[in-house]
Every structure is written in C-alpha cells, then in structure tokens.
Amino acid sequence: MKTRERILQASLQLFNEQGERQVSTNHIAAHLGISPGNLYYHFRNKPQIVAELFARYRSQLISLLDLPSGRELGTEDKRRYLEGIFSGLWQYRFLHRDLESLLEADLQLAAEYRRFAHQCIDSGRRIYQALVDAGILRAGEADPQALAVNSWLLLTGWLKFVSSVLVEDSSAPLQPEHMRQGIYQVLVQERGLVSEAARDAYEAMLAEYRPA
Image 1 (cartoon, one colour):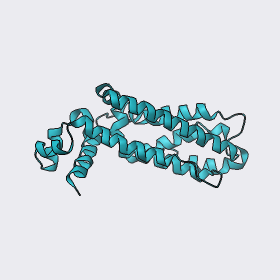
Image 2 (image 1 turned 120 degrees about the vertical axis):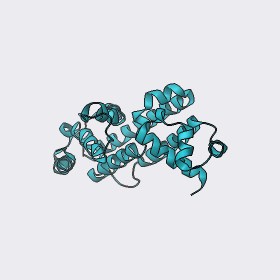
Image 3 (image 1 turned 60 degrees about the vertical axis):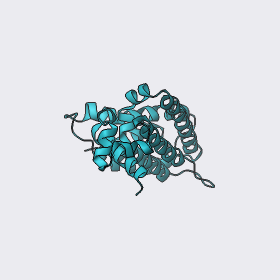
C-alpha cells in the first residue's frame, strides 16, 4: 500500500477510535512509524486528510443511492439501501459524530457537506417516490419529500444518539449492532404507510432488525 493510502487508512482508524479533535498529524505519523515531514509531503495539514476521507464517503453514498434501471423497486432494495447507508456511517463514523466541530473548522468542507446533504435528500425523495410507484408504500399517504428529510435527520443523528443516550458509558466504543438498530428505526417510521401487498415482507424485516 502506498504511503498516501496508508495515511488515509490510519487517519480513518484513529479518527473513528479517538475522535478527530483528539488526533493530530503527529499522532498519525507516529502511528504509521513515519516522519511528520513524510506525512506533510502527501497532505499539507489535517483538514486536507479529513476532506479526502469525506470525498470518499460522499462518492460511496451517492453511488449507492442510484435507482435500479429497467425495473421497479422491491422490498429487498429497501434493505440494500439501508444496509449500505449504515455500513458507510459505520466505516466513516467520525464524520457525523464529530460533524459540528469539523464544519466549524473548515468553511469549504461545510459548503461541500451542505451540497452533499441536499443530494442525499433528493436521492431519498426519488427512492421513496419509487417505493410509492411500485405499490410498496401507499400513494396519497406517503410524502416522499418529508420521509426523505426525516430519514436524513435520523440517519445522520443516529451515532450521536447512540453515544450520548443509548449506551450508559459514553466512552465505550460503538458496536456494529448499534447500526442494525438504526435500520429498525428507519423502517418503523414507515410501518403505517406500507401497502397490504408489501406488509408481510416489511414485517419480516422489522422482526429481523428489531433490537433485543
């Protein structure tokens, strides 16, 4: 693995484990066993590393939210979207957990994040509309735009909720199973909007992700 990629992977690991504010470029260099000068050859500063990690996360999520071509959506597509979204949230969990301080520290990142949020909400609206068109959600009752906004708020706030409310020890590391409960929370908000034809499949998914 090239040094630049090693720096990004190490930074992601340390940011996720310790929080972005607690990790300096010197910490990253020491973790890798390289000199700070070697790190600065690839990245001028820590915000540049954060920006590169955010760009990767954004590209991964935007491509995931594409609609399939040539067919209607099915309930399994809903599972695929949610699994993929929460996988990305887990892989880059420092971004939403430390979002406020990240955006305050970098105005360019703040502007890019705002555009990214609008892109995701618009993609979410198209997905919900496709679920209505496929007869999975009931037409006339489901509001695709409102569901997209509500889902975005739930998804992006989930990590903070888990760390500040759901776990008793806020210093304890988050676990992947916390992400599964997030999937349940998204699904349950749509429960009353599901059509009779899709109800059994939706109830099976709810049972699968329902927390103990």
